[in-house]
Amino acid sequence: MGLIKPGLSFSLIHQLKRDLGDLSHRIDRLIHAMDNPNSSLLNEFEEIHHLFHDIQVSTASHYLNSYLAPFTNQFEVLSKAIQHLSDRNHGALIVIQRKDALDSYIHSGVSINADLSFPLLESIFHTGSPLHDGAVLVCDTKIVSAANVLPVSKQKVVEKKLGTRHRAALGLSELTDALILVVSEETGRATFAFAGELYPIRTNGVT
Image 1 (cartoon, rainbow, N blue to C red):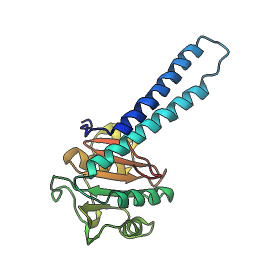
Image 2 (image 1 turned 90 degrees about the vertical axis):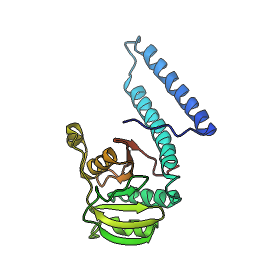
Image 3 (image 1 turned 135 degrees about the vertical axis):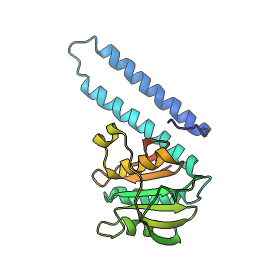
């Protein structure tokens, strides 16, 4: 299932065109360099890889804000929490409820019913916290519950490549319209799951 395009801002379109033009120029240069038997292509491949990844992250971060905006006004709080958790390699799994009811898919949670704040999210996912292994459920401006168990994706290719948090995020996103934020405990990288796909997001100010 692909992303449903919510519309891009003029400034982002301008930036994307510039970045993609740069990427195209680098690829053309790489193609021409292949005719020279003495040229080394490894650095060019690495630069192209990083540039493509930066473009993907910037675009995904824009979509993340677009998907969340109609359902919570706490994007900055979530962004700050993800950044801090990522910096510390604290694994996290945060479900933001959208239109679909999630009661049938989320189980065994501990009721929190508190205002959403990044200190509270950080304390929940701090290593050693009794609640840090499960998923937090966010609805509008509230943390509804923590330590929730999510349905795990059954895709065989997913099971080989991703950890439990990512498979759980994908599993719920395959069944509902929820958006799920994930921070990897191993790498600190942040992603979001939506409509059965994972997308990288920027953590130095998720905008």
